Image 1 (cartoon, rainbow, N blue to C red):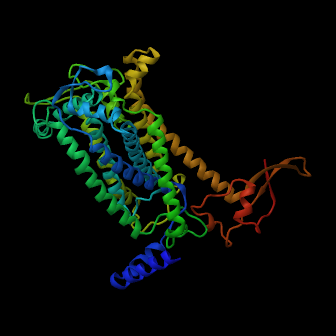
Image 2 (cartoon, one colour):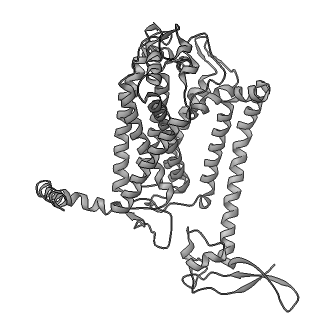
Image 3 (cartoon, one colour):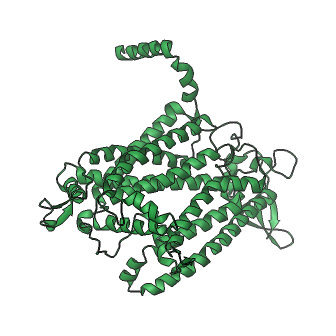
Length: 503
């Protein structure tokens, strides 16, 4: 009691000097929607916190140097092998630093979850229309966070200077050189020479621990400020409207839920880091320019680019016998740039097409916007086909299938499957809309069959009553329509009638 009294007295003194209560009171009373899909953004935030903590620990022992030495360490399989100081320090972290391998693997798993959480969060925003006015800025910030997360991941797994990361740097060198006119200059600016040399690892280390994390922190701060001071989107409901938010207040309910999520995520990452092996650089060995092994794939978020490069035909363009545009430029540079700017501009394109400039605080069900849902499904199918193409060498090796056959299957699939996915998703959305309209017009199917006096059979339905004498059914505009008789117990318990619909 004495401690609580002292804390209250300190808070009172602080409020007298800085007027903090006036600022904090509306923030503490802020309401957050309770739907589980709103937690993916918090997963990204807390995984980034884990990344900062584990990355700080790893940076204390890592030496980002390409200088060579003869390894005589704990990992005897590489005893006497010439390695870089970066690779040797990675082995030292893995086998000699207390908890080093655990922290390394937690760091890598957290990086994957960070990018995955951002991607799933953006998908939720896209399919529910939460990017519409007034939240276009937060959508743009989310796209830039996804880009920075991918760049940060690439810089991170390139640091150990093992065979896999060295192969990735060599591929990135070729992609940079493929850019017309500017490629050579950019390559010298990034790699400091004609080939990736000794300067690239210190530069990547600085970018990885300082530049990109600083940008991510700044964008996260702006994003959280935007979320905090704007009204949250929410799914439609009987109480949820454009002018209010239905959910839980910041303190204590939402704060306890958020803290519990952070503890659960940290525990899951610790278990994954201790049980599931990831990026075993000691098995890959040090980077050697003339060597490459099967199963040389980047992390999952860059497999799309890898798959696109494997499927693209070897088409080279010569301009005026002076400039050459290599085939790798189109799948590795042009396609990601177009996708990136397409994602940035999509909210403004949809606003112009739909001609709706009012504020939107109610999230849309995917079935209610079939064109957008079908477009998103098509994009996900395109991504999935390219990811599968990125591992075609492993599939060919495991299943003894000629790699040429898999390449042609991927080329046909990337042209056929995305439009097919668009049509299927669009038709499913229309079918779900028609099902909702049938329920509103006729009622909920009960599955009970009765025989009438004329000898025919009818199925009993539970009809819905509109809130007023109208066929619009305003209560269910955008709200999930009940499809089972049990749903009516909570939707409208006192308004049920029984009628027959001939089957």
